[in-house]
Image (cartoon, rainbow, N blue to C red):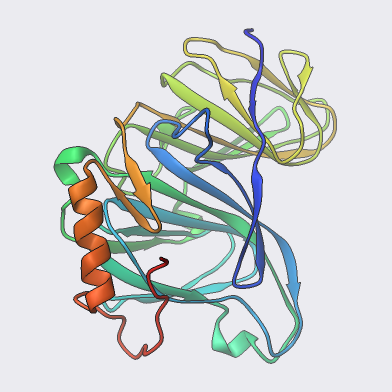
Length: 286
């Protein structure tokens, strides 16, 4: 195997929720269609508090929220109002413009709770980045999985590892939740030209080289490294085919600066679809 290329995430805080963000990075702006990867670290919220991300806009991407623990309420300008539970996929395609809210469900606010999960952004193909917005929810039971020799795989989105997810991705995509028992091994196939592993917790090696916890390891094209679990471990595998250069500005992703500028102007002017029942919003950063 080639020398391991590591992306060390930067720490962020979003409305009181600690985040680790390996993508985008200076060395790797994307992995396949993935232009943004947030690990929402395990967080305990006392009674009376929770995550509350007010109304904000997106263009040119699909967002995917996948929880390991806790619940979130997704609301958007399409009228969606969906409770997202562990193992579910919350999939929103922004297209030419959508706004949404993510918060702890009101029913949970009066009790202590925990939150832990991943949120990723996938850039839309250039010919679809101005498509009509859409939302779909995929319960945990609808996602395909396999288990053999101490390796449990859940295919979150796309296809690969002999599985195919029902999530309606717009380009070749691989997104899998991997859980390995101590001593288990998994050969990572060269199904896509771009792939990366993120070690959520535990200890693991890739072709005998230790993977740092909570870092992203980029796999060279064409290589088929062996993932080995030194103890019980939990990882995310992402990949796909290159989507082409993308510009990112705040919550906007686009192939041209003109689309970014138009979105910024529209949001600043209030010329944007609104989430029903919501009055507060996150203003455009200067």
